[in-house]
Length: 575
Ligand code: GCB
Image (cartoon, rainbow, N blue to C red):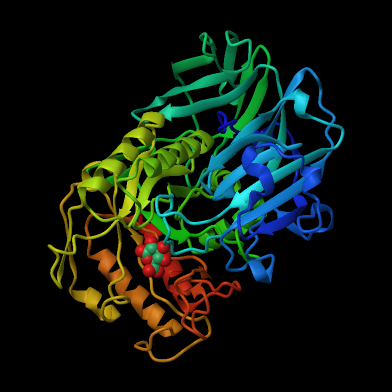
């Protein structure tokens, strides 16, 4: 069994949350105890060695690395078990939904395989047939975060390979024929046109459906085809557009003869014109910051609405109107909070560094991830950019892979901009002139570059003499820039790892930015220090990447205030 068509907006449906303590067993040898046969009486598994009832537990959602010291560096197989009872209405259908399991998941209910999933940052669901439900149910999940060269991401990442059931697990009870998915967005080229679709799932696929927006006195009516799909495009008037200062969300009700689902959706357009980014037709400068999905109140993966509020409030305090949520799709909560707060968002696929570009397997995984990402988030006004990759080399295999990914993403949603965090052309660049001519630039709407002059190369003043030769007439963005500093460590501004050096770096970066006429934003690296497998410099890094403007313990560094003040000025000028 493979995973089945994704149900959207699960949090607004009839759900039972299975979070809490789950039993777990590590399986270092990956012996699986017969599970490869897809069917083994789990209770027989409870022999001395592999004994769920007496085993330790982990919290779900959550990574295992930061919950158990002896799992901190563990990449491997972990078996989870949750027992639950469920009183199901026999006229309804039951699904199990996972917000994310990193990296692969196998899901068994009462010893029967429900399905498998690959990809650590996107949701999936399986239907639970009535015949499988018992009075007390045993849900077993294998979470496998073993890295693969032809995986997505590949073996090498800059972030911690947190394993486990890292996001919400929900039982979702739905009507026999239900609204599985819908898309309600403004047409990119016309702020007076609303377009989208409704998709039913079940036996009664031909139905009358409606999209109601009561506050606009608008009801769009139609009939689904034999595949359960209704597509629409309609005029709409008097819209109060969603904007960063006015994050207006409308109640939207999607109704069929057998189901109803509610959402809150903002309406805005995002486009480019020459070197400008236009939000609702008006030029905007993206005052951004990059963010990893790490818990700002503790450690490990972030997974809750509360975590999202803290992260985005920190960005607000920095006077941001934009966040780059790197380097993979984050949990659904943060995009909803961004919608409510008026924060523009860049969402990204984990096609990071050296992917096995020739691998068809890797391509299929990535394509499926893009499908899951867009399916889940396509109704979020905050998301203005889909990013397909980060820092990848400019060569044929990669170009074929990524143009395919861009095409696929656009075919699912053409209302947003597409980009990728690119690199300068190292061969053509000189010490003073940095050439930007990546093949992908032709296909992306915004030219985004990661740069670290003054950190990996030279001292910050090197930025004084740099000129950017950007060979595209498109908006330019620094998707990353930053320097490491240990919070509380001070010295002169030429001493690496001090807050003073980092501040100096940011002052020089800001000056450089002001000299680039087509620059339309930046999202420096990064809001908070985060765990990284590559950053092992003792006493300074100790496994943390220290380019945060805020430490992993929540203390602000000097550079935070420098960027905050710059953004304040930019906000006043909007340029
Ligand atoms: C990058 C990566 C980011 C790293 C950063 C760094 O370009 O995109 O994940 O953490 O550089 O600190 O070097």
